[in-house]
Image (cartoon, rainbow, N blue to C red; front, side, top):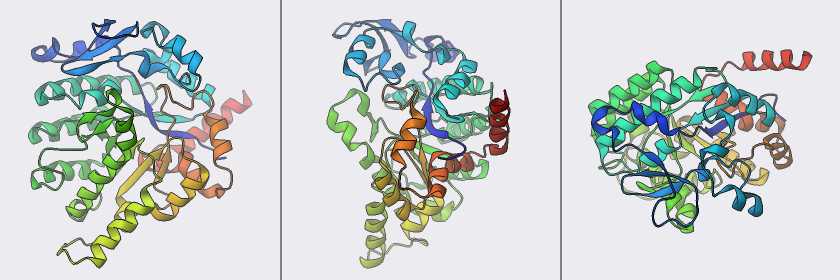
Length: 379
């Protein structure tokens, strides 16, 4: 097993009080936590926001419960009173990492992702700025073990560029963006945003829970199945649109969308761009772009799938995430899961997927993590 285990996909869950950070013009419309709203059948606290379907709070905080139906059914009809201590105390998050045998995590928002599906773009942007400030503050307790990733709306490009710059100044190390921007990824209007992300070395992430702008979390089971297809469509659009030719240092991350689809993805696109005369002007084959501009995180895929994907994308581009504190997280047994599901993989590949790649992407001080482990072992 790798010396350093680092989750490329974890989350914080935004406490209801952070929405007081939203500028006054939009504060009354920001997300709220309320007791069981009308029309809901499960008791407990719910996040409500604009036209989106209410979401039970425990759907965000029940790490490890989903794998036991009886335990999950007892846990669900509650609220933030059953949240882990780290819900509001970032120092407790470090203790939870230790308990799980994890050396660090990339921290994404939770409601920040859900807000992406709202229709009012200005309201979304205002909520995102509140989320970004909170994530930066939360992760400041240890910016080497808590890598904060914010979220930016692309509807107003002047604002988007400024919000991206502000996120960098706050100490965030990347941002989430929509998987379906207006006009499509290839629209030239977005070039200055891609240029800014490239210059600031801020990776752009497309996380699951979106189906071309819709939140799959509140939809049908079929929507969940479709999630990996969405990132394929989005990333293919970026490649064929020449974005990575114009911005060759831009880095894009697919979070929690699996990676087993990568071999067929690069095969299909390479075939399309080399065998079918469509008049494209792409300078690099998609397979090369994937190895130089793309990163994909996975949670539960087996060693066989990971090995297959690594051959197509390169084992330097695949990352594992625990998804803590969401219900299907591998917490508190992440190290056990990794040990059981990496059997047969080369040790070098294991080291990259379960820690090395993500620490490279986000410039984590790995030596500091190793030194800390040595001190802890002596103690």
